[in-house]
Structures are given as structure tokens and as C-alpha cells.
Image 1 (cartoon, one colour):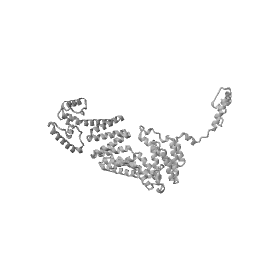
Image 2 (cartoon, one colour):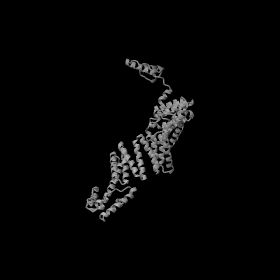
Image 3 (cartoon, helix red, strand yellow):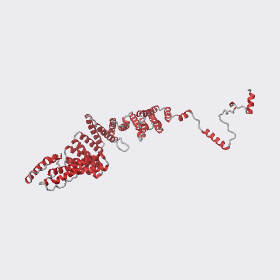
Image 4 (cartoon, one colour):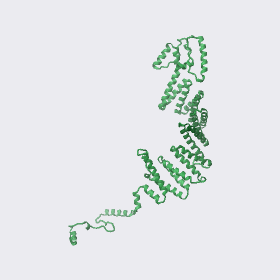
Length: 510
């Protein structure tokens, strides 16, 4: 088919080829469509105007939309020349990833967001890290320290970011060590303090103590010069922190089975007491004395323990610390009980009971009644023992403490049995219809009628006086009195009647 035939066919409409269609103009813009209405034309003009207002995108601009925020931020750091900041940020991201992988998908840490998904944190880290690197390049270490310190402080409010706080406080100390002591001694001491606190939170108490000791050593040379924002001197603060860390280490060593570590525990607690005295805080000094007194009590050095506990008692009295006075009275009473001084033990326990009853400390009041009941029970004062165990039992029930309730229930029953024991034995010895009836009723229904007087149906029944067993230290005096009474009664009464002595009462109870 020649060209003329094709042209003729096209005009007649019999043939239609794609290459015969109208071509787009070289400019790339379509010609306006003819026959559009006014509204369509306005919309088209508006679209053209909007397209003309759009900026021309470069390759770098397109990459910002395609890449992640972390990727773009790292590129900016590298292009600006902050290579060390880039490496530190990448290492932190890698550390977090390794911790998550080590914990596993079922761990709690796996549910926490990671740094690449937190643009605000990445931007803040970039700003402070680049600022610190810029200061480091020109040798302004104080500015570098401040930038890293501010970065650590910004993460302190979130417990999940504690690992970042630890990292940046550690780098703060590294920067502070570059400054001479004459110029940067204050920030060095502050750096040791912050690193020690981070280690203490992680449970690394021995390493924390080393940093606190370095903090104390630096602050000791400037006791009245270096002060915190609240007015407390660095020296006082270092003494307080050393007191706390030495107390923790001492308690940890005391739980060891090795004798050397238990001896080291005493030395550590003595250091804690010394630091508490240096801090000039009487409350801390009292607490340190209490801890040291309890440690000496464990090794049976009771006299030394008493001296420290009395120091704690006096400091609590000066501060009107009711809870501390109660603890001191309870501990002192226990030591007196172990020494066999029952009178002093009862005296301090009664102080404990009176104090807790006035202050309304129900748990402490329950403990005081329980301990006083134990001492009264051990010295044979069964009436008071029953009274105090009854109070302890009722209070523990009101508090809803099942363990304390069960213990006090048993002790209350034992005290009641001890109180009834002498009268029960007296009824057995006296005999007679009335006594046998009461004994039989008690066996059946546990009805305690032994406190009632015994009818004088048996010769000499009225002479059977029931007394609780005396304390151990006065046993000889009671035996002599009982022998004299027995000798007098034998001269006036029927020789067949047996007089019950205190030791016989104890044997019958057993």
C-alpha cells in the first residue's frame, strides 16, 4: 500500500493506526482539552497553579523520605564531620539490640521501644553528643562534661533508660579525669558520686563503695567550699553515702558462712558508724549504733551490744522518735533476758508496751505484748503472761495477720495452761468429791473451775496455797520458806496431809 492510499484511507476513516494518532507536544505539557466547561477549566487552572508551586526535589530530598529517621540522622552527623558522635550512637544502638537478643522474645525488655524507633531521643542525643565532641576538639573539657551531664540528666526520669544514664555518667567521669584536680576537682568528685549511685542501683556495692571513697577523699580537702544546690556540703554528702553503702555491705557480709567475712562485717559497720558521726547527723549516728549493736548481739558480745543500743536509745529520745525508742527497748530487753536479768528485761518491755499503746503503732504493740508475755511466762508470772498474750492475739486477729494470729493463739493457750497448772495439781493432791468432780468436768468440756475455793471437806484442804513457780534465781529462798511452813503445819495438822512445795509443783506440771 503506497502513501497516498494510506492518507486516503485515514481521511475516510477506514484505517486507524497508533502511530497515526496525535502526538504529545515536545514540551511535555498536554494541550488544553477543548470543549471543557467553566468549572472544569477552573479546576484545571488550580491544579496547574499548585503544581507550579511545588519545589523541585533533589536526590537527597527524595532519600529523606525513603530512608529511616536514624539513617538520615547518622548521615547528617557524618556529613557534618562528627564521626566520634556517630560511632558512640551506633554502639549504643548495638548494645541495646544485643541486650534484647540475650533476653529473648519472651522477656519484658523485648516489649520496650528501641532507640531507632524514638526520634526525639535520637535528636537529643545527636545535639548533645555533637556539642560535646566540638568542645573536646578545642580542649574545653568543662563544656564537654556539662553536655554529657545534661544528656544523662535528661534520661533520669525514665527507669527504662537507666542504662543510658549509667553510660553517660561514666563518660562524664572519664572527661572529668582529663582536667587537673586544681581546676576540675569538683567535677571529679561529682563524677565519682554519680557513678557510685549508678553502681549502687545495679547492686554492685563493692565498686560503688570505691567511688564513694574517692568522692569522700576529694571532698575532705574542701569541706566548707564545695556545696550542693541545697546547701549541703560535698563532704557531708559523701559521709552519708558512705554510711549507707557500708551498712549494706556489712549486712551482706553478716549473712556469709565464712568467719572472715563475718569479722569483716563488724569492721564495715564500725566504718559506717564513723561516717555517720562525721556527717553530724544524730539520727544516722543512732541508726549506725543500732546496726552495730545488733551485730555484736549475734556474736554474743552482749555488753558491747548494750552500749551501742543505749546510744541508739538516747538519740531516739533526743529526736522524739517513738518508733526508734520502741525498737531500742525491745532489743535491750532481749539482751537483758539473755543475760538472765529478767527484771530489767520486763522493765524495758513494759516501756515498749506503754509507748506503742500511746502512739497507736498496732504491729509494734502486738510485738511488744508478745515479747512481754514470753518473759512473764519464763519467770512464772502466768497471770500477766496470759493478759499480754491475750492482747497480742486480739490485735493480730484485728490486723488480719494469720501467722502472728496462730503464734499468739498457741502462746495464749500455753500461758493459760501454766496459770491453771498449779491449781490443777492442787485439786489432784487434795482429792475429795468436789475436786474429783471438777477434774472430771475439765476432762470432758475443759471447764476451768480450779480458781474457785475448795470446800473444807478434807482435813487441811484450806492450807493448800497455790503459787506459780518462782524465778530460777530465787529458788533457794522459796524452798527455805516452804520448808519452814511445812514444819509449822505438820505440828498443827494431820501428819498424813502432804504439803506441796514449789519444786513439787514443777515436777507435777512436767
